[in-house]
Image 1: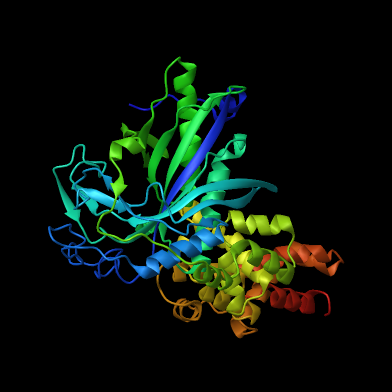
Image 2: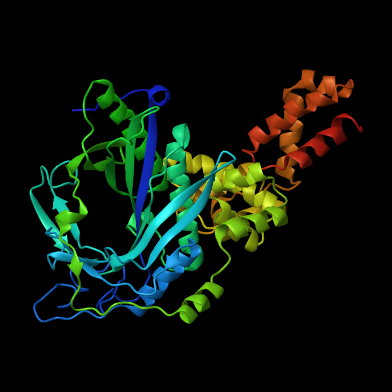
Length: 499
């Protein structure tokens, strides 16, 4: 049964949204959090396990030092306070993908607390307060076979892959974010986008959302405007694309408004997000901390990072995305508005890498924000998910600049690159896309255009030079876009004006 929804603009006339995000990041360590098993993605199911990550009796964990360091670096980049003493705890709950019957996490003594991240939406800055950054281990993965949804309801049977169980997982939890109003969905997306850029800059994770390296639980609540209390929140689990983060907030705002308008009560629950429809559906009632029966992990010693080590890590932090954007804006000569377009499109790094590969900033922006953005939008994917690299875009730009192809032919070459036919130069050669030089074939096409359009040719001879555009178009059509328009125009002028 589909939900009743209120028009988004109407929601905002009666309710104030409050959002919050819990973002899970799989760290890019070579081994798991508490054992030496490999973390390589895509291995055969249940081939990267051992007694420790399977929770077999008598096995003892040892904490991954690189994972601890990576977590501290994330906390420093987010302006957090780094704890001088912290420890792991057992979070007790049973799911089939939790082989130990509990998750080793951090509870009341996390590594990092009290940070913030500023994000910009439509020229306005929103400060997102970070409550905590803590380290834990990932779960295994359930695969429900049969049925139409890929979920357990309606499935014929379920399989479990424990390869992912025990991979280091950092959870970054925001405080509630009030005051975003109509921009709440965009603020949520902007936050996850900026966080992803920071994680990439730190090099702590591949943050490939399609592989589950980065996934967000999106909390949404509504309260009547002027109310002194926030509404009951829902938690949309494991949203795995930037676009879907925004869609999940927007949908929940509309759904919850309909529930409240009807005199109903929003339930505190987890919900599933459906990529195909952009909707959410009920999951389970939301547990509180007491339901997990946390207690200190007896098999792991506390973590006590000393101040000297923390300062050494702080000094070694790379240039963070906000600072890099400010520098690139100066280097590229773009306005704040243009840089905001690049940020909103997720194109800053793509353009930067394209420039580094040899393209001019103007050409790199043109292709990523133009043709490639259109294709990504049509396919319903992020720019970075397109099957083309910055180096290939730079090569495409180089072919246009050299006059080997024009923009129209470049778009055809791009078709081939996206289809997996190779790099741009190889596609141009295999498809025969090179610009036609001043050959006999082009001379024939020019003369045919003059002969086939005598009235237009006469207008040009009579001084109406702008009419020559129709003849250029006729030649381009005959040559299927392979002629150089400037060359065609010059050849027509030589025959009609100079003669």
